[in-house]
Length: 411
Image (cartoon, rainbow, N blue to C red; front, top):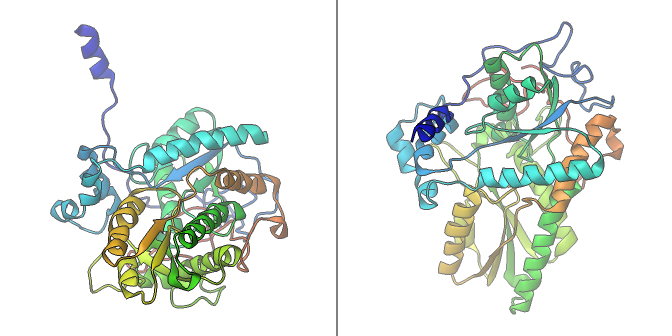
């Protein structure tokens, strides 16, 4: 009994709150990029100088791992928006449906194991630390452990492929928060890998998924002109979309770089698999007030609007793993909508721990270590390899304004 009491007393206290928002960033004299390695401090679009790193930081979104975690987790996700717990409880049903457990942490644990094995196979003698933006293990906890292990330079991999506030800049802000919270602003340097939406290793699992699903639909008797492929991604406010993807440097459409990057990848996937089959880009997981415009069409509306189709293939193009938005919004709601409309339907896999995807992440690390020239980097669209150092103002959130961020030119 005494031993049990001692063990209980020694157990770490459950932490519910992410690090506080940073109030500043650390700039070396003459540097244009905060907390960056010397090769990235001046802010080149692509770093072609070899860089030595002590470790890699795998950065996740985070997710609850029990019913008691759900509301504290949602408070972290919505911090600064003034959303009361009563409203959070109303939107928690996705997590409650699955026992309060998001699969995203287990997905990242599996990815972490796969990456460590792939690093060893590639001869990369680099430890990998894992930290989340919104739930344990938090980013500041990962940085504290890394610092205790003697790490001073890190290359961060965000588990999000496209350019937008929530999928890129918010990671950069949370790294800044973690550095300030740990007191490591002046002693630890963190670069980030480029957004990898069109890296061939990230795209390959989607190619295989669409190819297999189209073949299955054909085998079930559905002609090509009766099949519709729906490429699904998370919707975001249109104001955020318009400012995504370095809009000063690219002539994107109304959906900005976020939409443009998805369209470019979807087009490549269809060209490689079934160019004669119709497809469209659709959105899911919308939140926020009805008065606020978000990217459309919603996937369920798109399914209901289909005419002359007997089969639908849903491709989770905007996601790297089967987390809550995939399991609920696609596997539950979208497939139910398809069934209600008498459609044969399949949902293709996310990259997860597909060997090509894991190899792609290894390649992103290697290109920064080597200082690989841009024309030698993997890319399957005409957009080309994305920036190593984010451009000024890229992926601004006009509702929240600029917050301290690293791994990009100020602001």
